[in-house]
Length: 485
Ligand SMILES: [Zn+2]
Image 1 (cartoon, rainbow, N blue to C red):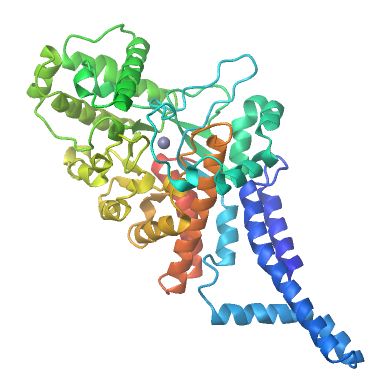
Image 2: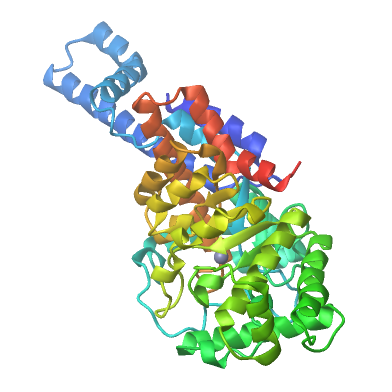
């Protein structure tokens, strides 16, 4: 029995291994199944030996037969166990191995670009890095030295990332994806570059900076925002430069044409599949629909309602993204830093935007499933152009919690739900993007398994449909949304 399971998994993982290395996620699943079987085997041996001792060794022939049949007895015990206690295994084993074997498309992550000796370390994995914010109370799973992070550290390249980085050089990031059985990762970064090749990595640049062409001193309310707005100003300077002009054009129309649309078109030409907004770190997600004259006046004079100007520019960006076939990604729900305005990150604030007929050609993706507003977000899935992913929930929260949210989404509009990790270098080297990716990947697949198993056992879906939903969430939904091969 044990051998049979191992054999089946080994055959499966052979098919999956890329470059001769077995994906770390498969090893974890295999270990999870082997351990309870080993325990059962021990139990049967002990039971038989106790029986033999009690009977004083008087059974010659019968004993030998019984001993030969012990594997069948284990199978029988397993069957009885699964009949009498159906809730014991949270994930159906067949589904678990299917889910582990699917090569995923990761809708959102921040991979670090591998650099070689003597090169400057990469800092372009985020427009607003969260590593120098004021202290916050970290979620317990992500605290330094947490057992799960240690496990992740041991699992990636057998615990020696430094040796792997040396061995693989520029191919290191691709090898990390192989370890996680991720085929394509959407790389939410300021820029891509050597070491993050398409199509394994697809670019998602940042567009917030374009919303702040005026000085932002009046928008700063705390030390974290002070850093953030300074970084946005730097990024806008970069966009000015790349657009061929050193400074802010005189009129709003010129700014929209020569800087905003030019930047989006340049991103698209460089392979971007979406634009990302970290808006929730800077201001609430309530985006109004102000008249152009109001926005023009603020732009020209620097006086009046700056938010109206931001809102107007945002809509122009969203319309252009729709025209170019790029999705718009929103950070939704809780975020990093003790000053983060959770209430302002509520995805329900975006509803008027989704209901605007002018923006129906733009697809919006709500990252992180809007946790802790995840259940509310379910209601937004019926908008034809709204999607979500469950990135970050999968390392901040336990699979049980994520599975409950996931099940509600999958029971409602399953074509809009996407796998993602938010792999991010939180505190390297112990908690790098590799470890965050490992934890989110493992927990995300587990949560999906729990959700689908629940639906299967409650008679909502067939086994075939459960497999289909797994493939949709892990890759097909993203493949369709971004038009990938
Ligand atoms: Zn992110």
